[in-house]
Amino acid sequence: MAGDTLRIYVPNDTAARSVGADAVAAAIERTAGERGVAIEIVRNGSRGLYWLEPLVEVAVAGERVAYGPVTPDDVPGLFDAGFTTGGKHARHLGATEALPYLSGQTRLTFARAGLIAPSSLEDYREHEGYRGLEAALAMDTQAIVDVVKESGLRGRGGAGFPTGIKWQTVLDTPGTQKYVVCNADEGDSGTFADRMIMESDPFVLIEGMTIAGLAVGATQGYIYLRAEYPQAIRTMNTAIAAAEQAGYLGADVCGSGRAFHLEVREAAGAYICGEETSMLESLEGKRGMVRYRPPLPAVKGLFGAPTVVNNLTTLATVPIIFVRGGEFYRDFGTGRSRGTLTVQLAGNIKRGGLVEIAFGRTLREVLEDFGGGTATGRPIRAVQAGGPLGAYIPTSQFDTPLDYEAFAEIGAMLGHGGLVVFDDTVDMGQQARFAMEFCAIESCGKCTPCRVGAVRGVEVIDKILSGQDEAGNRELLEDLCGTMVDGSLCALGGMAPFPVLSVLKHFPEDLVAR
Image 1 (spheres, one colour):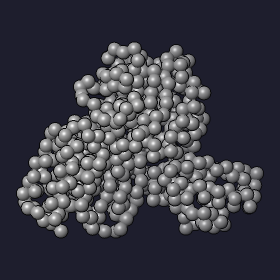
Image 2: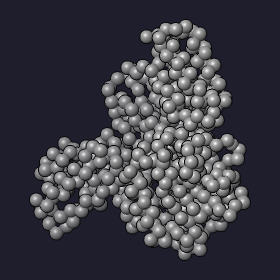
Image 3: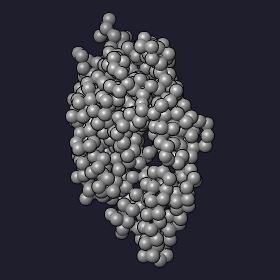
């Protein structure tokens, strides 16, 4: 290898760093220096194969060869085995793109994740970056919105509301100032897709938000980013500065005469601020509390102005739609669920990580083909989908397609795509209690059904578990859940009963006296 510079990729993703990626990068650099091997270490983002992190890749003859999980102690042996030319080693995995976990996916939103250096605008542009914005700049505002409508893109953060309809409302609402707000307050259990985009491909979010601004006539955007993601904050701010310097943001986007400015705002650390109106209150410097609706944020949002509020993954999907066309994106998926879904596998799972697939694959396929079953090797008993407010799904419903309407039919939700897996040792009675306790702790306190109902719910579950009038208290618990669902002001109180009701329905044997 003398005279040649070898590219070695070591992820700079938070998850990879938490298991020693920085030490692995330092060990590779040190060992290469000792052996006179000229290398360039590229700190890329994660591919999303988190059980294999740190996943080190070496560029060999036009393809990348993967090794993982790599520790600093493995590095001398890797050099001895000739890993700089793709040599065999105990950590050798083969060509990265050919790994079954990756080759079985349909990566559109996450096409560049782990492939490029996150802070490199040049790298981004070499991989179709900003082609979507170029296409949008050649259209008028209505045409941009029409492409999003044609794509069938729906919100990836909750109920799956059609993105194009939301944008159309903001476009049609008069206002001298309009905003685009990205909800990056990723607080659901088992979710990390937003963080992975920001740390692996930040420019795709910037590009998507810029297109949204052009579509509705907004000149200012904000990324409401949770303070618990310090690396994502640094990466996004670096990328925004680079985009501004290159003319992709600012008073004259790409010489078009149209303005769009973008800033990061750190979240306030409250789960309720993931709800869009609470987030807007927080952005305005107020306590995060739910607003009454109507009016909707699209009509009267941030500072009383028409505002596009979308989940990060939704906005990050916009560029590929403008590069390939709305019809291209719509051709993936099933029914009213078009395009791709980013599933995040967490909990008691053998192969935890991110999977992007077209809507329509079954829950069982994802858990078995990608997840490989439980980490403990025991049977799966339940999966919670959609965060801490999502229902616990029993094995009898694992053949349900990953589809918004199909999940709604079984009393569940896809939400942000997080799946938390439990094996057969789980105590579902305690999981029901946890769901109610979570709501009691995180409630903003504005409405009685949520503020009081969740506290009473914990008390009733405790009575059941202690053997106090089990039948009567189970009936009371169901009635209380109904009140919360029907009377709560937002989804926190309205959905907190879903996990409890799913336990009552599918795991009643666990909600009994201990």
